[in-house]
Amino acid sequence: MPRSWAQLLGEENAQPEPEAERSGLFSRLRDSLSKSRRALTAELASAAFDPGDDAAWERLEEALIRADVGVRATAELVQRLEARQDLTNLDAALAEEIAALLGEPATLNVKPDPSVLLVVGVNGTGKTTTIGKLAERLRQHGHSVVLAAADTFRAAAEEQLEIWADRADAAFVGGERGADPASVAYDAIERAGRDGADVVIVDTAGRLHTQANLMQELAKVRRVIEGRLDGAPHETLLVVDATTGQNGLQQARLFGEAVGVTGVALTKLDGSAKGGIAVAIAHELGLPVKLIGVGETLDDLRPFDAQDFARALVAE
Image (cartoon, rainbow, N blue to C red; front, top):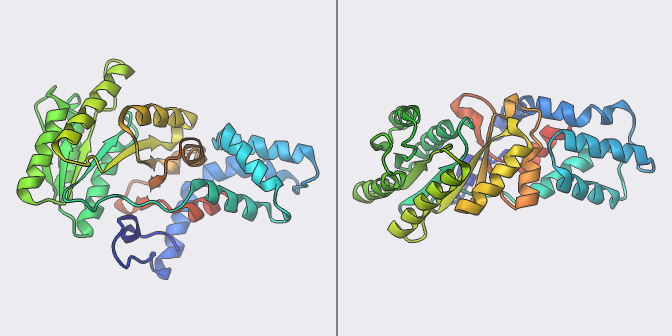
């Protein structure tokens, strides 16, 4: 069954989504991955896969790379498939190996009181919208939330986050245009302490004058959070736009070096033929994908389920 929000949040006695919802959730995931699935399966569907045919293996490698699985993950998948005794059902075998590369189910660390989630990513990835949807889901699961608009360089980002705060019945902390982003994060943690809030989610800038400036600014925000609350940030989520393909992998490397990313939210899968980037990120960088966005509605931000993702990516 698809993973539930209760499982993602590590709630006691958490259960998967009810059977009645499984079909609908998986259908939406399959629809969102249709472009990626076509990119992956088009070459393979042209002829029956013959494990003894070198050309068949070359087609498989090309198809995986075309779906942005990445060179390293592709090599690993091919090696694993070559070691299998039975490849009569290539789709099923490939889905199993992709799920294995994606790793065990991850959780969001929302146990501390308060828990601080630092959210990073370049502009245009859907970062602020993802934060808003996550805040609403946390509220539905009984968590009080503070949203911090630490992207003080874009007025639109603060306005958008404040709208989401209203929708999610979350407290909102902003700052003056051009104010120190680290001070906004600090004030939000202070607010959470005064109000007894459970979770602080900090939105951050995705673009400054240079890449180096951005990474330095984010590292400063992280240092201030660490200094204000022991063990914080408890999660550092990177939002990656799936349509960027291998560029998303490079983003994950850079942000990981600067702020110690703990997980990925992969957005815009419904508009991408490059969904395989989830495999590349998980395998090459060891970063778990924790959330996926498959559409515009609240329900289209979902906990990541490796097995369902792999099946939806591969099987017609």
